[in-house]
Amino acid sequence: MHSEGYLQKYKFNLNKSLARIPKVKHAKQFVEIGRKLAQLHLAYEEQTPYSEVQVQYLSNEPSYRVEKMKHPKKKNHQGKSVDDLSVIVYNDTITIKNIPEKAYEYIVNGSSAIKWIIDQYQVKIDEKSGITDDPNDFSDDPKYILNLLLSVITVSIRTLELIDELPPFEVTE
Image (cartoon, rainbow, N blue to C red; front, side, top):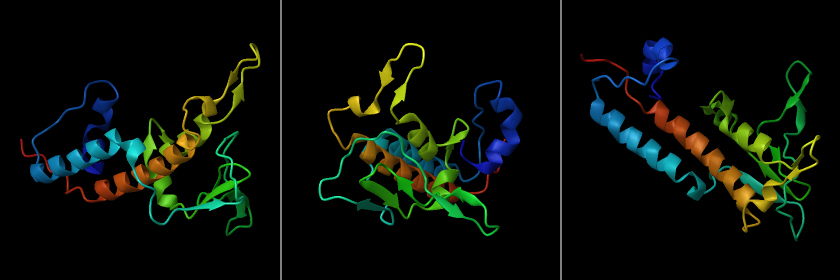
């Protein structure tokens, strides 16, 4: 279902009915890559950080508490200020660098998986009730959110690599 050919052929049907799984050439390759994708996605929290990604600690005693992650700004080739997607400022003491921009191409429900983590894992206060939603309280592990973000970066990159390994989509029936 990650195959570009499959998505193009069935794009109108996928919005209104269950996915159709046709008989295809190279079925064994689709099954093999599908298994790898399933294992990767089911064990997403257990992925090791992508080798090129660097975690920079700006303190000898870094805080793992997150308030609101963000991308720093950089100038593009037209001189406009844009988000530098290769860097995430986790908090005042931790910065994640060298994130491949391709990792943001892995989309789940219309949004990059990495951006979803950045948007969801922040301290929010409901204006009407005053209730604080603090993701730092979700786990006893103080590094949980940092490790989750690093895992999602790895899953995003590895998913795109596996999708690129898919054979051409050719229906046999």
